[in-house]
Amino acid sequence: MVGAWAGVMLDNSPEGLLIQKICRLEAFASNLDFIFRKMIFSGLSKTVSFFYRKPSLLSLDVAAGAVISSAFFARHLRVTPVPWLQLAVLGGAVWCIYTADHLLDARRIKTSRVAERYRFHQQHWWVLFGFLVATAALTAVAALLFLPGIVLVFGAALAGFMLVYFLLHHFLPRRYFFKEFWVSVLYPSGIWGGMAIRSGAITAADWLLLAFFSAICLQNVLLLAWYETDEDVSQAQISITQIAGKEWARKLVLLVGGLGFCAVGVGFGFLRHTVFCTADRQTEPVFWAIFLMMTAILSLMAAFPTFFRIRYRWLADGVFLLPGFIWFV
Image (cartoon, rainbow, N blue to C red):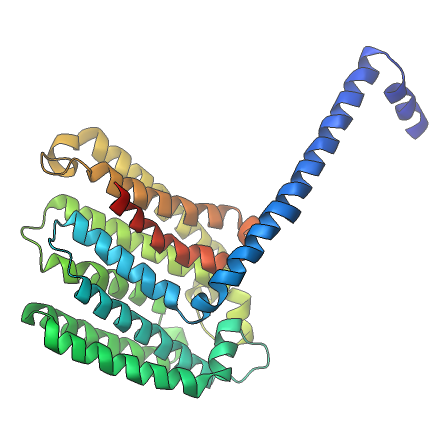
């Protein structure tokens, strides 16, 4: 059979010429795949790893994403001038929250198999704890001295909810507490709320964009929980994917992405001149386009997990840097 096939390939008949062309195309595709995956993608991954690994382990990318996203909403809500000091306080607060959470988790985990970020916090626990105390103190002083009273009241209320979150997350049995839903509510509340109370009237478009951002946050935490299910099991961590199932979480990520595209399509199709684009909001489509890009990336990560398995966390958290593009429009 092989000999017959080889004979067809070597002769000059139409079938043989066609098979030779197919073989050449397969060889070209194989070489192209090698160049992309092994050279370009691998080289890019190593470059990103060199510059992004430590900031990611230190949660600096999360803090930067919070600051950029809040600045994005300041632009959308027409807050002028942009309160950069408030953004700095927000970044410090977000970094303290994530670092405290990681330090508590790192102290609790006793298994030998531990994620790199928790191992990093275990190895540098006291140094990070010192930076945490200093950053928390500086952030609190800056907030008390320079932020308006209404912003302080909002921050204090949000801090109360964060305290409840910490108590439930670290002391309530894990099977009764799903941090994914808490994060998808508290994180966007802090990002959007601080700018909303500085703004004037909040329109329907503002609420819709907040709902879209909250959905993206839910996508993010569900996607990370899905990717890290086996890792969580080995570390005795409980996530929603272990209770509801990995496939359920993956489908929910895709569903949220699909609903986001549908909502934007319907909105711009039927409400273009009322809710979404008024006379003073000519750049409104750009805000939604950025969020569509964010949800599209997260949806692709859920649809093709094998391809995105390498550096998935960097990409999932890195999408919150994309709102920074609004400042180039």
